Image 1 (cartoon, helix red, strand yellow):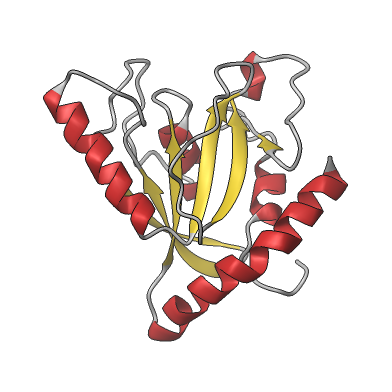
Image 2 (cartoon, rainbow, N blue to C red; image 1 turned 60 degrees about the horizontal axis):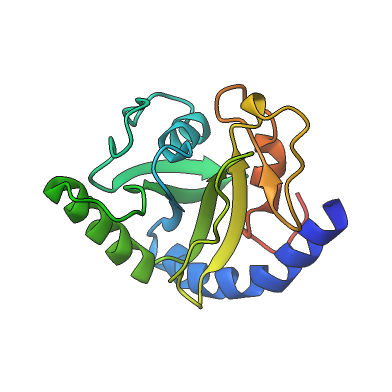
Length: 178
């Protein structure tokens, strides 16, 4: 899967770099949006990448309501991770507002980390911005023994940290090898 991932990054890196370049020049941090269904581990992934507990994590679907922005540096590149509400149809009015905010975040995304649960529902996320680079991330591999990520996706465990090095390397941050 390494060759497939390298091909995917090579194809998508120029798109993300072009969008991110203007942000770097203006001194703003480029957003990396964590998108997915509820309880796939988006908040846990944000916490792991940030190196501290910034987002509330519970087993209750719909915990994240507002977009949570966390400034980080990955491979020396200043970024802002954006944790978002899980994408789903819900009758909960407050959660509906969170899903609407997620959609607004998507409209401005340069890079989308589409997060899925390893071994769970892997229905592709719809309505992702066509101009954004996308990396499919399968989280919770610690709960899915023997799971192999499909195609160019990255398999990680936000809980144990497994696979996060591969995720960081796959991010379209700059042209030069790390």
